[in-house]
Length: 228
Image 1 (cartoon, rainbow, N blue to C red):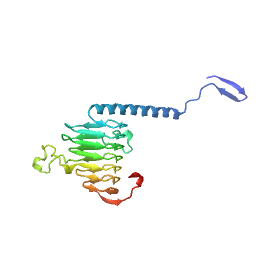
Image 2 (image 1 turned 120 degrees about the horizontal axis):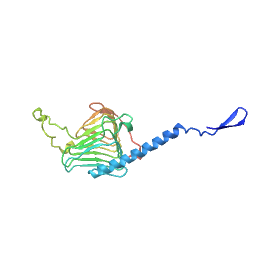
Image 3 (image 1 turned 180 degrees about the horizontal axis):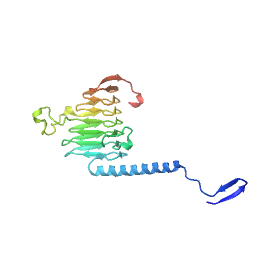
Image 4 (image 1 turned 90 degrees about the vertical axis):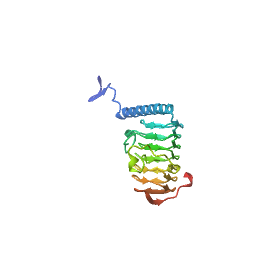
């Protein structure tokens, strides 16, 4: 470092000022975003090659777990986002997003703009989620009981044969709160809200809030015409 006098008691330094810490943090954020995008692109291609059908703009944050039974399928609509990393989820996740078909010909179908954080989706026959629906952290949705009711068969029996009335259908713009469980045979209408930690079975109408175990009606609400 050199200095030169310019006035009595005043000096100038030729040393360059240190870069602002915010400059480095900005570079780190940008690098992380690029790395996340590249990982997502790799995972999209990886699962496409393994038979998962995807629309455009699908995004993965962390690697999901996907297991397909014979002749079954998983379909992800445009701009689906699956968060399997606690780094990317405010509440964290107990495990990665899991899609699992447990019966031949079973289908898991997600519409456009669906968001899932650390959820488990398991289908023996058919499970469908509508456009714009959001699943809070660690939600479980299934259309099977996995084991028979009869105790003599329960330990070693296969997954019971699915019936049409066991399918699960979740409408559009539904919000399912963290830790909720959606059981076989459930239908949830458009725009409805499922409170955190709820256990849901049966028919839930559109435009309602339900919560509890078992879930019960809390209130109804109207929806702006622009959202219908």
